[in-house]
Image (cartoon, rainbow, N blue to C red):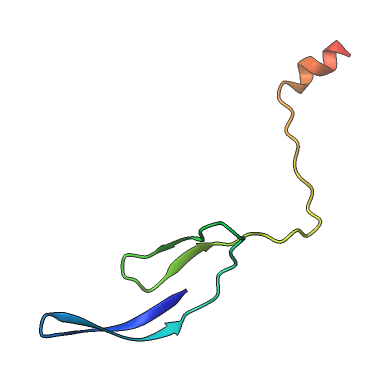
Length: 70
């Protein structure tokens, strides 16, 4: 995420130097998901979670009826 210095002079905008704010993890081909607060001071960034051995959760609906059939 980058920023640029911007200055208004005589009714025109002058774009100055750019600065890196922070790096975003971005899987190839995907657009980073982020939003900026209305005051422009904070970001909310969705970052991918690295695999850490966490297993998926399986949700079984109406399990009691399935158990009665057995």
